[in-house]
Length: 349
Image (cartoon, rainbow, N blue to C red; front, side):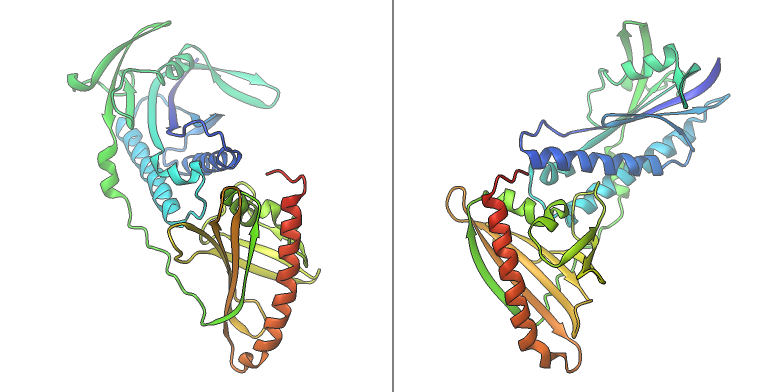
């Protein structure tokens, strides 16, 4: 037997999404948050298990340092909500998961006691009655959504108002809780993303496509589908487990030799429109090259897609403007045809 501090941060707040895009994006958002919590670990807890939307952490300790635990909770809480605040500014997707991510909540449960370890192949995990108890405590009578719950083995109960005796299948257990909402006053300021549309418009074309507006937005903004409708790109490098957002970077290998790095951007559009944009500084003769896809539902099941491209030129690069416009018209018109063909095929998100 060894004494250990047992600790569970648990994320909640996502409803059950029916739409396929929301299901995928909610999985990616929670994955990012769990990785963030694992990295925000001043007490150097060991990760025993990722359990759905929660982490099961432990640390072998001969005594409890309640002050250190509270600092760990504050650090995780602030990192969690700063990430969500930043995501709300940077998100480009309007699916159910992305548009409600700011509603996510986090709670913490801390317990202390004897544990053993069970080994399965190369995996070693905490085992015993105290492990069962901390998991049971995720179901409790705390009346607020964001809190830190401490059993009396971790923190002496001094506030009777916030103390509860819970009755479980293993027996009665005393615990107290602290609300966490006040910590949001310590969140850092998140700077808004500036808009910077280049001066020269090089391309402007509209196509009406028979597809729901949110589905078309997913096809265009999700890099998983990019090679299916874009000619000239041989390879795409991007983070596959993150939802695309403002500031996200990806690399394209173009014509087998040229590598182009692009960053996701946005700009203001009408309230009934969605916009997805990308910017690069690696197009010859230009200082900045921005592409925008503006989507708007026309009639039920149809979406108007408007593609606009703007650039700022290097000295004397403006002389190349007619040639660039000509090449763009040919390349993008072919990509639009491929996109329409993809949508009209048996393709499924």
